[in-house]
Length: 221
Image 1 (cartoon, rainbow, N blue to C red):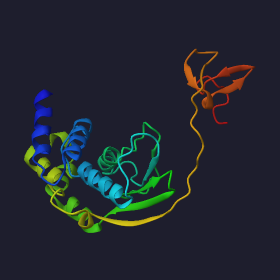
Image 2 (image 1 turned 120 degrees about the vertical axis):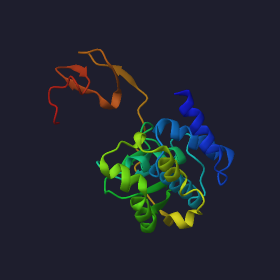
Image 3 (image 1 turned 30 degrees about the vertical axis):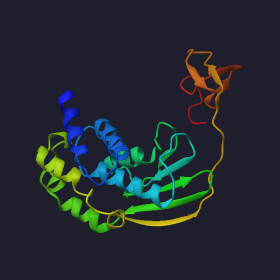
Image 4 (image 1 turned 135 degrees about the vertical axis):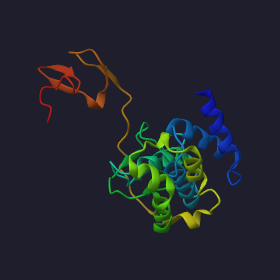
């Protein structure tokens, strides 16, 4: 495992078009993503492009949001990982969500300014990625991404870093965008049946007891 991290560091540090902070974030993204491929860095660069277009910095709190249009059961998850790390808008923080359309695109929304940009990978970039050996000679044949020949995988990983953003993505905006401002709940309760800790906004009342959704009888309500 340590050898793998060292290899990740070596490859990322060799990218001359990123600054030190961008390299550090990409290194972290690669460690969590787990394998070299073309999709994750594509999403990472698309994320950086969106921030630049919105004149924004990477999100550390909850002031921005991403709506990503990749779907399920296609080669879009890697792209989503890259967008998360670049923008700081993560599923865990609740500021990234999917609207599955099977597209390599996303909306980046600034909740404070109520402005947004839409970022879409250019068709010619997608065609080149699907025609490349990583997908054509390996993934299409059912070979898991971590088992692709490393020379091929690393070449796919590094493929876009020599290109400027405008050659990789199309950007629409910034434009006005109104979002839901429902506040987060910071009140904690405990299910009176199973005892689990549960956020107050997910509680239900049944037979005069406060219960979690797992213990709630009426599952479809």
